[in-house]
Length: 163
Image (cartoon, rainbow, N blue to C red; front, top):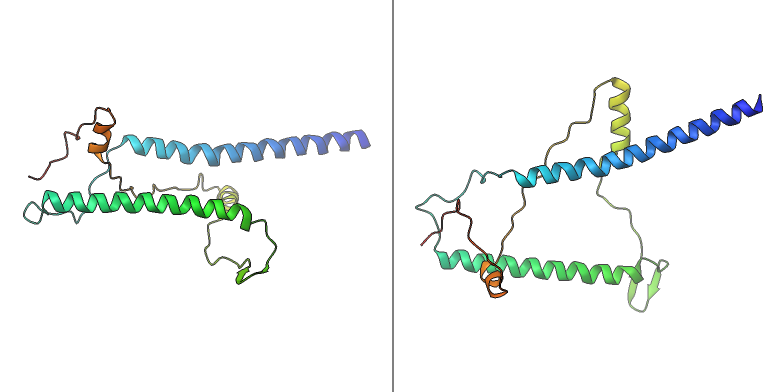
């Protein structure tokens, strides 16, 4: 009798492990597939783009793009600096270190519990959890820098260039 119980427990553990791995793979692979699929699609312009009469000068656009590009570089550098500092700070116990107080506080941010949502959908027979794509990202590329590096960079044919 105890051999049968042990076999059942082992089978349940194996089944649980397979489900957990399958859920992990689905949660990782499915969003990546959505992003890859969306990257190939053309994203429409927002509703409030400039009309031809309102269009700023090429110099204003170039200045705004350069400012955006520089700010994005600064943000990436700041993120790298924060990650580098956190490697040490995350391992410290809470307390005072000179004039610096290191503590951990609860976050006010919340995120949906996808495992619980999936379980609820499954229990109610509602099928897969509906997903929606994220908002499109703004990407600004310095084509003059790419040309200096010896790369062939061309302006997309579908994008009008204001003169």
